[in-house]
Image 1 (cartoon, rainbow, N blue to C red):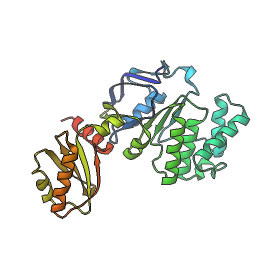
Image 2 (image 1 turned 60 degrees about the vertical axis):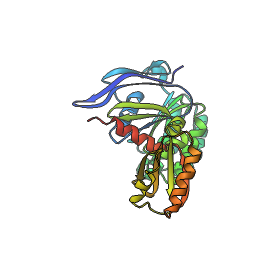
Image 3 (image 1 turned 90 degrees about the vertical axis):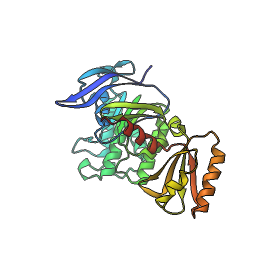
Image 4 (image 1 turned 90 degrees about the horizontal axis):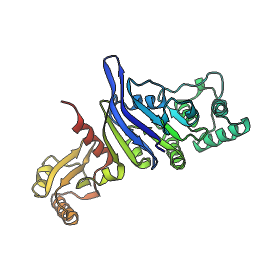
Length: 310
């Protein structure tokens, strides 16, 4: 059974094309991430899959059924960025209400809701109404609502955005535990988080899926050394390193002046690594960290840049 099948999906808002012929399938095998720039189409894609928005053309199937089929009620959990809650009732009652709509008796609904809130690391808002909850509490309430009832497919739009590090860690741990029983599709701008919990990414740009790749494969692709120095690299260091014939490109990390990305053309990485370190040492630098292969962030940025329309 295929969890999600999207075929030639398009969504237009008057003159704006938010999705432009998107096609892909998702089975099991770990969480799938949607990544891309703001306005790329990630939220729109999740909203169409969830049935919140109607597509302009194309089709979506969930568990081999049309995505609006009544048999899918309770089998798909959704958290969108602008999630809203019922006013006038506390957090625990919010989740229990959804659980009972899904067929649970009240006792099971209560125990399941309590377990979810405990796993999310905060039960301090059990009886708070949404209007007086903090942003992080409302976000965790939305995640709990998406997961109640053990859905087969879970769609999460920026699930940890705005959460403190401890709360974000609890959410990631919860996803790891639940992904053996459910398929997760997660939209996120946090590429380090994506690399931590997801197995596959769909890179989206201008409403199109421009790449669909296994994260481990992306990290291995290309011969690259990610070098962190003991101090900021002076401008002339790039030309010094470029004298080594097997180096094809050297770039500074714009966010970290002590980090260099060095692309090379050789199978003998061990020898070249020693040569580079020797050259750096002779120019007054030492290497504090060195990793082989592209970082996920670097790989995604390259894909998006290469896809940009003229």
